[in-house]
Image (tube, rainbow, N blue to C red; front, side):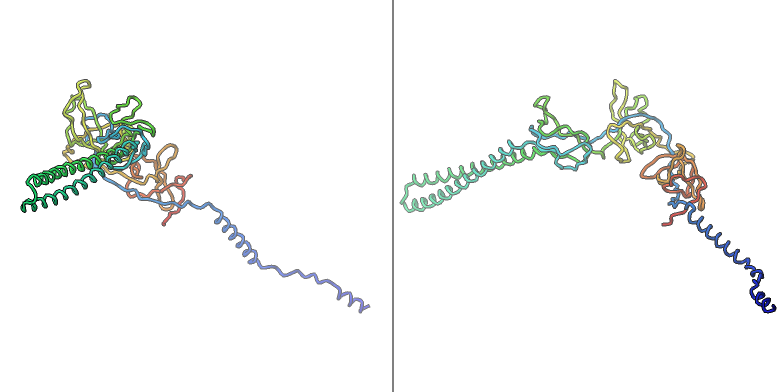
Length: 407
């Protein structure tokens, strides 16, 4: 019995509670989970845009002088020509187009030179014939000189009569005269050849000066004549060539106010096509003649700026300025801010720039002035020395964070 109780006691299961786990393990696992969440948020968060910046520059310009007279006129070219050929003929080739720039002496067109070429070949043959005839006369004259010498020797010895001696001398003199005439014929033939060569060269139309072709008048197959002697079907020119460096402005000034204009006077010119572009200019001359029908006097104004935007026959508004500066010297210079045009943006139809403040940007509305050479003048809204964003990215907002590109 006791043995049985002992055996049953050995089979009894021990119900002691397991040892408690340490709380630091849970804290460590929670910290790892939090770190993973922070890392995921950092990697997935939107990055601030990387931008380039520029510093606003300050430029000083003289204060605008007062206008004593305003007027309007047109851009004209002092040097332009309707280029034509010197001879009448059929156009074979036209080598120009409108807007093409050509240099002085450049070939613009070619005229049919078949007739001129045939005349040149004839003149060359005539010159060769005259030179051959000259050689023949020179040989005959040499023989006559020898014959005259022998006859003189024989006449001295009484072996030849005086009549034979006189005949030999007369023959020599005749050949000398013929030689002089033949030499002149050779000169005439050479001059005729030169004329025919020029006739051939005149069939090639060349540019008289460097400039731009503004009008193309002729096409291959048409007849062209410098005098338009062939009727309505004959062109008078290949095209119109304009020297763009000779552009100036002609203004008709009312004769009642011409006393306000004088040579050398400063002028501001504004093209109708570019109302914000003020072009410096000056009076070249006042034409000493009045137009009785319009009661005006023509004034020539020279442009100090050469620009491809200035074209012949454009409308211009001009302001004749007072030459004297203010007596008190006040406002002698007007500061203006200037920045690259790519820094200018649009927001709600308004011109804006983005000012860099540390690592954020500030939106600022500005008033834009003249634009030239990739730079834009800011009339109001900016001060010199401020840093602005170049090529602002889309969606940039006031107070947005940015990263500066230091490359």
